[in-house]
Image (cartoon, rainbow, N blue to C red; front, side):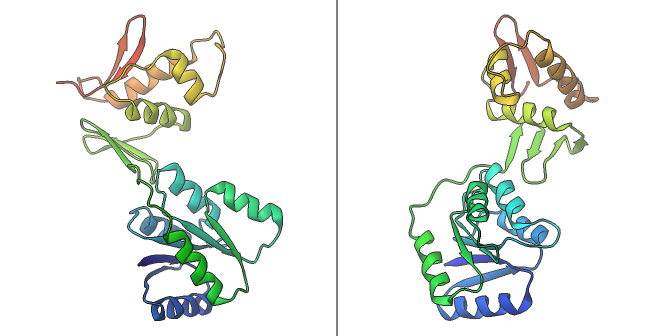
Length: 225
């Protein structure tokens, strides 16, 4: 079994690593949240043990980013925060379990093993591709033909939705509900305006447009011949 420990305290990390290795585990270790997120994004671990308080990117942000990108590796938080609100916050972020420091090592092993006994869940893509258009959900970056494209947050959400439904027609109502969370028609051209801006940004110098308007129905993002 293989786990990733994301812990910035060297003494705590050494203690956990030695104990898990004695139990037959293979352990990778990251000292910072940024390094931990990079390693965890591969989804090649059976479990993640994550300290909540980390330099740079904290544990909550790591788990939220991974879950948002479809990485479903089981996560157990280690933390000194023992309040009910803290535990609820951690679980809502996407963690599977929560262990308060100081803890008995036997309990940590038992909790990790319990998580790994759960049926595996499919790992979703962290990179979306349509033709030469590529979106990295972890890095929150977009490029076409190797050229980086700068998008505003809402434009990124819109493009992600279109790419996840590539080859299929998506209606204006679908976009309003999924991207803007509007469950009513705001009677504005908000969708049309954002589509126009997004279409211009991803077209660049490329004459082949990817976002097509399907008259009377909606929009479709597909690879052009």
